[in-house]
Length: 120
Image (cartoon, rainbow, N blue to C red):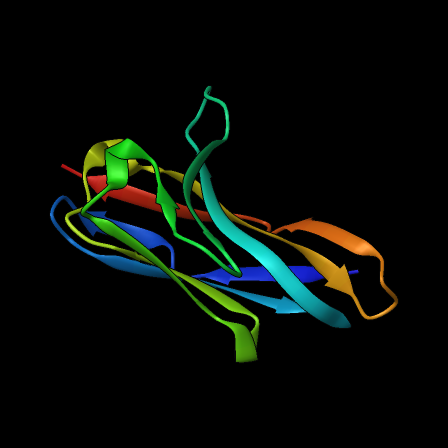
């Protein structure tokens, strides 16, 4: 199994910045896609940004130009740099990774979530 541990959430004023991190542990052969999702109270979990192993990144329209997703394959780590934060960015942020284990089984794992609160 693959465990994902997120960090970097917190409380910030509107206009501020936060950087989220997500580290994967386990016997991983390769990670194909990584992504950040968020879920506000009473709402569904939505994609914020995704980064494949090959190809272009993908962002939700609401965060384009403000958020940047990056990955460090050597460290099996995913990042989300969030700038110009708005109160509507307040949510629990989850990381997701999909890939292949060393025994050739596929995995699709989620982190436990980290709270981001943006005050006005």
